[in-house]
Every structure is written in C-alpha cells, then in structure tokens.
Image (cartoon, rainbow, N blue to C red; front, side):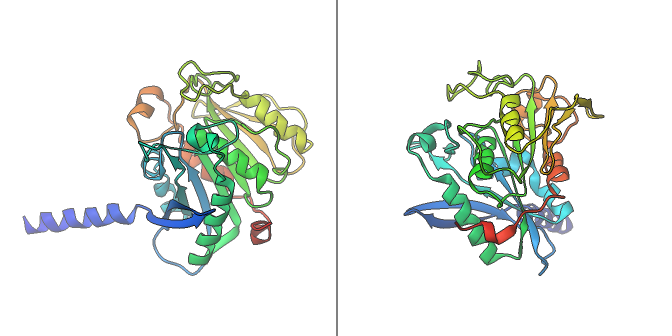
Length: 300
C-alpha cells in the first residue's frame, strides 16, 4: 500500500510539472495574465517560444489541456505561453480576443491585445532564456484570428504563425511579409466557414472572410504566385502551397473537419474529428525552422 501511495504521489508531481505556471502583468492600467510552460530539464541555452491563443469563450488553462501542446514542447524543448483574453462581466473565465471584427467584449471595448502580447513577450524575455528569433504563434478560432493580427501589426516579431479554424478579421495586413503562415481548417466548419460568411452554428454572428481569400490577401501582399494544386497527405488532410519568394503561405485542409483542434483532447473534438492528424504536432513541425529579426522588432 505504501509503495502504491508513493507511486500515486510521483504521478501527481509529474502531472503538476507538465503544466504551465500562472503569471500576471499590468498593461494599460489593466491586470492581464498568462500561463508559461518551461519544459524540463532546466537549461541556460535560449529556448524557442510558442504562443497558444485560446478560442472565443475559452481560457489559458482550457487550451493548455485541450491542445496537449506541453507534450510536444517537452519532446522538442520549447516553451509555451498561454495568454488569457478578456473575460465576461459575469463569466470571467469565458474570455475573448480583440482580433479586429471579432470577438465579444474584447472587440466591443477595443481591448489592446496586441500591446498585451508585446508586453508579455518582454516579461518572458526578462524571466527566461528566450531565443527571440524563434517566437511563434498559433491559436484556435478567435485565437487564430488574433495570431493573424499579431503578424500583421508586429512585423518581424513572429517567425511563423499557424492559425487553426480562424480567419483574417482585420481589413488588411501590411506587416506580415516575412512571417511564415500555415493555416489549418476543417472543410465542414460550421462556426467559421471555410468559404466565408456567417456560420450556421456561429456564436459571434460575424460575416467572416473566406480562408482562401485570407491567404490570397497575404500571398498577394508578399508577391507570391498562384496556389499550387492541393497535395493529399498520408493522414488524409490536403496541403496547398502558394508560390512565394520568401516566407511561405500554406493551407492544411481537413476534409469533413468541424470547428475543433484536430487531434485535441476534448469531448467535442472526439465527436467531430475522427482522423489521425495532430494539429499540435503540425504546428511545431511547420514553425520550428523559421527565424525572425528578434528583439529589435519588439518595441516600436
């Protein structure tokens, strides 16, 4: 019995060690928060950093669990930051981001989430050994929309972004010329439709720009050629590449995929995704090889 209790205690410690730690900072007079996961073992060598942005009405702890990104980070040795958006007045853990046209209280009140993310990066850089040339962002739904906005408005900061089940919700994107982009989307998404418009099951009621229209806007701004024919991959998804002279623009489409994080750990994900494609692993596999200008781009 004593041995069993010791084993259970070790498992609890392992589970705790696999979670991020909570941090707060003040931005524009408001207290903001985020979770930061730093994989073991400790090292003085600078590590890459991936931002994972929760979806609308989600939060940092929820997206940490549902993406299981810490497992990928532990294997590859990168840090993960999970920022918190703006909570509702009654349900403060149901949070949103101001990604432009969407979403919720954050967009309605014009919360400066770009400034928050910029301040968070500075704080993490002061606390950890950070490779500032290898900072990446991904997110689901409303978080995916913010990842686009970050690339557009913080040029040179993010080496790559991987929006999942979101779209571009700002009018244009003048600053993302050097940011590599991989967009992941389900063809049957009924919240943020692949072809644009208002989703049948959408909560925000926003008329979204189509995914291909979003990517074509980015591709045209950086002088890319036409999209190449889609390639079917072993996991059943299809990959489309635009012919770009420098930073790539790519689309990973999941046939029949709904508004979920592919391969994620949630009941809704298991109901609406039956494939073997892991978005978390795909995010890192794509992003890891790209670099940016680093700290010189952080403060304007």
